[in-house]
Length: 75
Image (cartoon, rainbow, N blue to C red; front, side):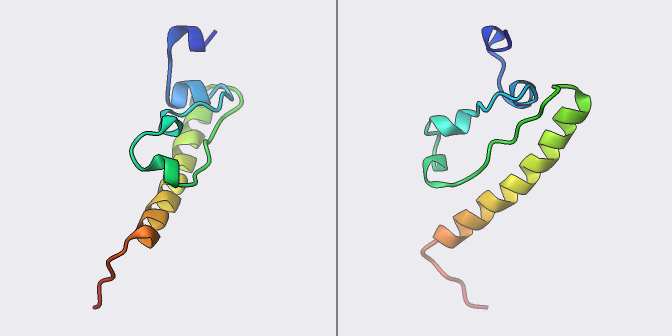
């Protein structure tokens, strides 16, 4: 039912549907490993917890991008 409304993002992932637009080959994401965070109930607390866990996943993505850089800076 949720997919019939063409919802994306935290609204659909809050209902325990692992759908993320980044998995469709958007930019550099096809070379990055990350988990799609989902909820169970779809309520406000679930959406909040998804956003907090997505922040942690973003940090993982940033570290992977830094590791993939070919240029090293010397301080």
